[in-house]
Amino acid sequence: MRRRANPVLPSLTCLKAAHDPRSDPVSISRNELLVPVNTKNRGTSPGEGKKAWLSWMASIVQLEGSDLIVKSGLPPRIRHRGALKDLATGPCTEDLMFQVAKDVLDPNQLNHFERMGSIDFAYDFEKGRRFRVNMFMARGKPALAARLITSNIKKFEDLFLPPSLGDVAMAAQGLILFSGVTGSGKSTSIASMLDYVNERKKVHIITIEDPIEYIFEDKKATINQREIGIDCTNFNDALRALVRENPDVVLVGEMRDYETFEAAIRAAETGHLVFGTIHASSAWQTFGRIYDLFPEQEREQIRKLMAYNLRAIIYQKLLPTLHANIGRIPAIEILINTPGVQKYILEGREGELLEIIKNSHHEGMLDFTSSLVGLVEKEYVHQNVALQATPKPEELKMRLKGIR
Image (cartoon, rainbow, N blue to C red; front, side, top):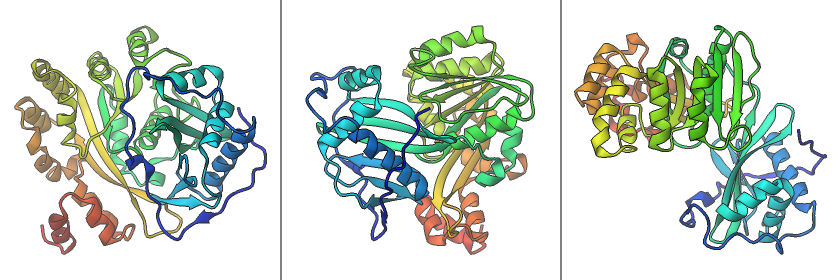
């Protein structure tokens, strides 16, 4: 584990939210860059990049931030309660960013970064705190985004997740998908569900991660965590090896392409409980996102596999709260694959599933609007925050007035 010195902690500038550099144009990705990144003659002094890096990491912890965004030419920025704030350190130079890459990455990682223009890795900062990092080139200059991950896996109630997810997690087999945008807490919620299983069932759990985010302690379950690039070469090879590893529960991470999704749904079909994530804007709209991964001639077969093997889809979005001791809280939508849902999927009526969700709260389902209403009525979030978060503001206004 990498240990830190005692870096000077920059202060947080809270005058106004910062512009998010992720909205800036970036280069089109290829399998390899036409012109590799040249780090050989770039940088400051050896060790200076590591010193800056440790200072940034310490700042996130000290200031209770969730993310770090660093772009050449701008001050480092921390995401605090959902908004980006400047650290009072002055602009980060391009050469300092190159030095960070040279000081923090090992030789293989640095070579990958030079060839590909980006790299994902995890960094152990101190006991119980780990960072998930993407270092990348943007318009010819290095940048990075890091997210703080703690090894403290929280329970449902600590994450304000509905207890019905416990029943979902204890299923014998099937596919459980978490959907939402980047930074919506999907990985944290899945970790909570896996640990719920870990505390209650003697099963074999295998995770395939890029990188590993939460470190699990074996309780009743036996857990093996495989990290891409360290324990296996890629997702596809790791998925193919699953059959020989005799798992009961599998985490396959993000469904980035049809090969990964097909392997996951096939694993669910053969008796495994499979967890995964996908980018989608609601539980019921996740189906369209999945079908788009496949050629048109294969979509009907995937629809049937989904109908018979899906266990649940959970969509979540993190919202800032009214409470100083609660940073952000999830608004949730839950779709559970009941016989009625299965019928709609087989008939290609996925667009009508929202109505089933609204009428099936007694079966553990929850629509996004009802979740927002609950958060406002319990005074966790401001009404204006909820209205900004919903795709159906007029419906939410009526519900808040008691009109259904």
